[in-house]
Image (cartoon, rainbow, N blue to C red; front, side, top):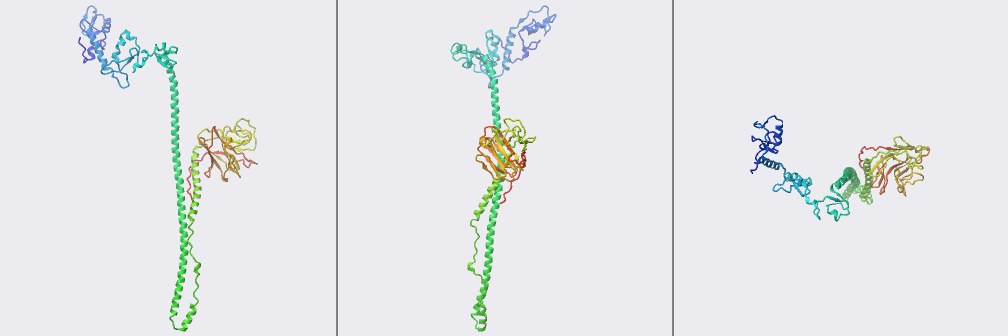
Length: 550
């Protein structure tokens, strides 16, 4: 039988009624071909039976016969067209196991044949009755992995005890007493678990992304702090260099002035000596002339005036002492060191205060903790001792013996800073306290008991500890800054107006929330210490670092 010419177009094998490729082509007595369904339906709607192409009229309805040759040619044409349209396998796709030469992309895999098929080679599975019962799935590689290595049977069950895929024979041997279920059933269970796993994994991813952001934020803050530190260092070192240069100039000037004074003294003495030498030279000249005169009268008259020479200084005790250079340099360096140390501390304190002020927090006083003698402002920013005990409901948070009060806010990590005005007060206490401090009866306000605070009166200034740390009294102290680095275990206090560091408690151990802590009511006799403690906003105005003047 001749094969279909693959160069023919679809028009050569198209029905003139439906205009599609012939499906079960049949021939009319006049020799034209149509799809059986198309010509049958066409004649069903007509009174007379004629050919749709040539209009030849048939007196009786023709008995249609299948055009065997055309049918074979159409089938071959369909296959040739299908092969041309089928895609070749691409990387990552499953190839057809039957194709030879150019492998086409598989469209299904048979779990009974353990073979993957393209459209063309899948056709028997769609036509042959026995093959139609095979289980077809989406194309997949390595179908041999679906076979039990021990029994050469399909892995179609799941052992819930050993959590492995098994075949039917496995359930009668090694897994006889184990609960097994079809793969599809276990698939549904595991799919449900995947949702939970996905959620947990997503949460873990988000936690790590947050940690990355936290680390990046820390690095960014460190860079910013480093830039500030470098800028402050440049200012401090420039000021110190200016101080050293001024000290050098002053030292050189002092030495030069001492040398100039010595030179002036020597110059005066030399002039005086030269004058005396000149006078004595004149006398010697007269004496020499007199020795050669023979005029007795002139000789005697002149000799009388020469025997009493003019008054001159006793030069045996006169000397020009060199300036006392020895020790001058050492004294100058000692003075420079003292000044530099003082100014270095001042400049460093100023730069440090600027940095810690960046960690300002907004805190307000908690009335539930305030001693009954204390009066709080409505905004929670001021507190003073009113001198009159109020009737207040007691609670576990309230201080009952000492005039203490805490803030509403607490801090369990990181850094925080706040400022308190202490102007016009004769006594006060400020700092931070941990959450678990005692609130009733006698209290020992030391770090061991959970308090880190400074205590001020007109006679004493100290950091409360065991023993207390005495601090230099500061008569002009008006505002105090308190800085805490929770993670580093650091509590620092600053004189804000003077921009001086007061004291730092280091190596502290914090394991619970910290609260800013205030005590305004110390020694409030007859209202002499009734001025309030005021939580003040930080003044962020940058101040120029002062130049060192020695």
